Length: 302
Ligand SMILES: NC(=O)c1ccc[n+]([C@@H]2O[C@H](COP(=O)([O-])OP(=O)(O)OC[C@H]3O[C@@H](n4cnc5c(N)ncnc54)[C@H](OP(=O)(O)O)[C@@H]3O)[C@@H](O)[C@H]2O)c1
Image (cartoon, rainbow, N blue to C red; front, side):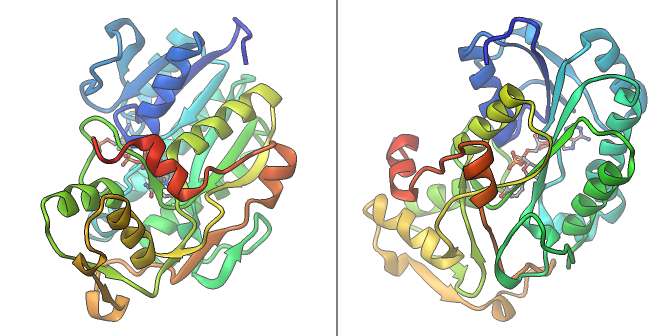
């Protein structure tokens, strides 16, 4: 992707995906504007590339889009804390669904390509691996709010969109919020703490840089539609965190096994919501990084 006309607007730039997208576009000299609902938290982002944008604020959405005139928008903004989405239902739907409606409303009469990031939590978790064709049946506010956003896109009559569904994003970054289980587990394990991690929830953990590459590919190829972007390995949450412990040379005995019933989290989670990446592999030449290899790339020991 090298076209000088490409101008990418990133929402949620302080988040895990948002900040990795910023790094990518910066390194590749592609014009971009990073936006977040409050001040910029990224040390490597020049002031000229940043603006405040709360996607629930229609006036801000209009102003930022009209001033920057993006050719592409990657919506990485979301309320991602699944339990908080149960406690603060209105906020959850405002951000995850209404925010997307605001963006669609603003770009409706343009050619802007919207890349909406979605989730495996739109499924109920009764199937091992989900394809793009499987029927959504969310079991939490978070899942429903993200599915409602997808439905808005399908029903909007706006065709320039791509939905990338992902699962259990991991990586490290600056000033991440506490909801990210990977960075939380890294920090706790380094402190020698014991963790209770569920053994009956299965995911296909996704290295955040793989999702960045997928976004870049979608832009480069102008691919529209729905794609699953995830890792290849279906792991229980417990296996996943044990692999991280092993990599850190921390005893896996620090990672206790617990059932979802016993942990009793506020929001229901799908039991198995792995994503089948066959379509992305064949149509986007998507390659997921092996989990252990990704840990060495992240350099979790530093
Ligand atoms: N993390 C996962 O395991 C996972 C799995 C599947 C799908 N996804 C999807 O992947 C995408 C990126 O996730 P992530 O892990 O990068 O999430 P993240 O680290 O929580 O980042 C989301 C960002 O969105 C911001 N945000 C919240 N409300 C906003 C608003 N009204 N306007 C603008 N920005 C707002 C948040 O800011 P504050 O922190 O200040 O609220 C945060 O910086 C999301 O669409 C998520 O649903 C994530």
